[in-house]
Length: 468
Image (cartoon, rainbow, N blue to C red; front, side, top):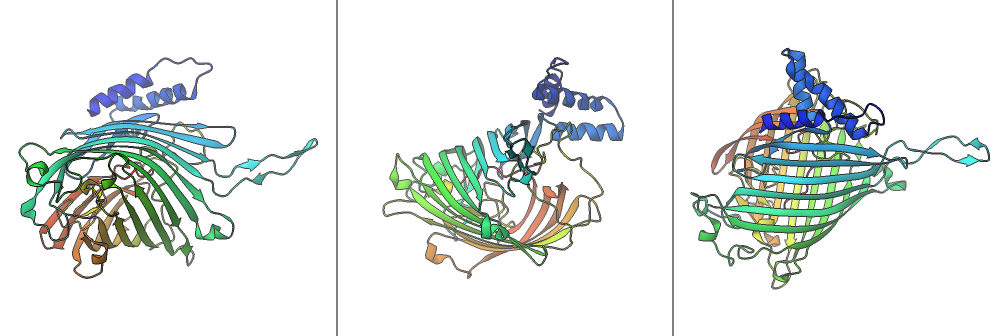
């Protein structure tokens, strides 16, 4: 697949273009084609440049990353491009398709629209232009997306905190998620708190099927009575409203990232599966040094590492360097999710959060347990992580401790009867973002669990829409 991807990149880059009146897209293909000539030279510098062009080049590059746990590592192609307008608006376009060896796949299109930072207003009074003044310090960000995914292997053990591993079954899951969201910074007196309003409107179209052959299937061991949504999957109209708070204190030595979100899952075809959910995610970051890298940029798509300055560049992504500054941080996180279903309604199992290993979005939660081990409509989790670079290499050592629980009823969410796990491992960084991780987790009641994963947002862009 990678060899085919290289051939496609080379073929597209070699498209004939006119020397005069060359469009931006043609120019980008031409520049990338010239950079790919390094792949024909056999020395360390040329091969390094070749590798960076293949996985970071624009407008096309190889897409790499892990799909949801149990569905493997995938490869494909990504197309990334942007357009700057005279009105100081910028549109980023990101298309990608990726498949894994077990037949799972994901394809998506993502568009971002925002005002370029540092814009200026030109005011003319008569024949003398006024002095230029900043137009804004922060501006709204609009996201539009459509993503389809097909996963052939997801483990299921039943619902609630007391399920048995002997009840293990598998299922396949597909979903199309199409929608838009807006992030609206609130200025004025609220500016120091970095408070922003989040609005979202999605259409969700899920489907459940039997798991891989040779594995116990969910349709053979469970029914709709004990697994809501198994017999029929409804389409959803899903709006959401949220608030994000990101202040820093003590000259940046304590950084907060608080997010409260309220979602409404409306099933027009079958109100028995309509419900509501609220989540609170409270993250505290304590940098160990004055240098603290920016982990992600919300202005980029998941395959994009372009800066937000709006300046065109033949090499828009910064090169990978082996001489990063010494860095480290302590992260403390509390996460709570609760679901509300009206009388006669139930939360479908495939839209419930899970803890154990990693969830369907690839987020580690109680890593020593098997993936998807506990599933339910309500969740409480505490995580503490220390990560520190090894010398000045783009490699970090990681230690973490977690405690959490799943509950079938909101009244059962409390800090007692927690399940615990501890983890240690290595992370490989690009631009400050952990993109590859190797973690060994222990401490749970069901053994140990080694985990290796590649971030689905390999180049440090924004995250993809959640699958639940």
